[in-house]
Length: 209
Image (cartoon, rainbow, N blue to C red; front, side, top):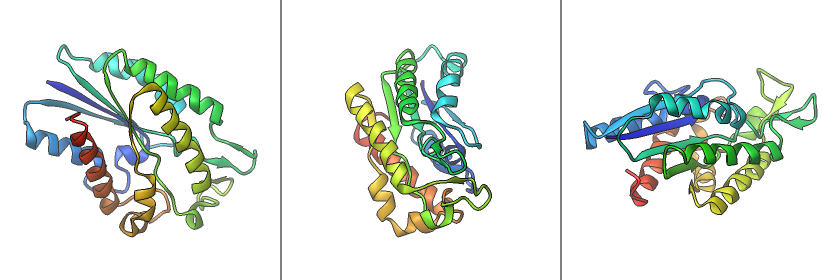
């Protein structure tokens, strides 16, 4: 039996989607495909989770759930929160140097448990709605910054030869996806369906599921 682990923040957790987000859709798809073939763990945390928090909890999360059967599949969807800009402090929530360090740490730890390591691209936001963030005006999300962080992530994945789902441009160009971001950040069910299909299609193309 394969183990599937999904790490991320509120979008991975399924915030704003009554069906539980793209991980729940992926889990249901896998269980329908092979009812006894997968243990599935959605380990997204519905707060401003960054690469630092994921890197710090990753080893424990994987170790306590590690089964005797392999292969495992570890999917990360992190980085957008790292790129958040703190207007009052004039710095990023997680510096680019620290982000790079955290991603490399995640890869190193994940390799203890799996050869199938996948990073989902960072996801775009609606700048006009979250620059600044209405409920936290001292902070901002901007696509310009998100792009800079996703380039760091993409380059690390290329260097380390781990899987990277190149989806930012596709999502930004999708009116359905961008219109699903009612608060400028979190997709509704329509957006999660797009994320699910993007991730599922990639995993199947690469024969990871």
